[in-house]
Length: 107
Image 1 (cartoon, rainbow, N blue to C red):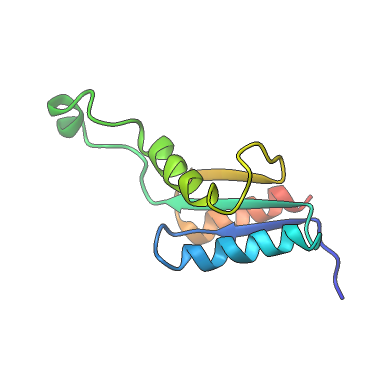
Image 2: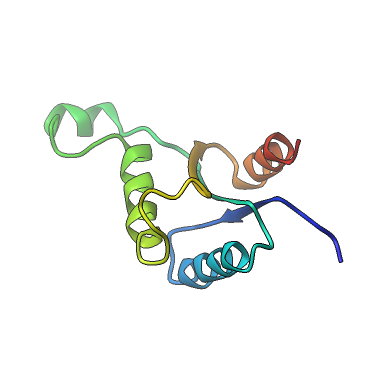
């Protein structure tokens, strides 16, 4: 069996995320993995200038909003103070970003 210390779980903010989060929790609970990175890549993280002018105080930046949504889901399965999970939200093509971050976190 292949031993691994870090796992990259890609979430897309759909109902399927719950199953992936449960899998990540199992890997940590059974000490199969030392750390699980929950990852989301968005095509664009910026709001249009027109939208920002019309609603300047409406919401937090998109990446912070996505991270908060992910954290809310993760809080159902993990202790809030655990150091065994990390959330990463990035901008760009999902495939390219997954490859990039799997290389970064794989070293």
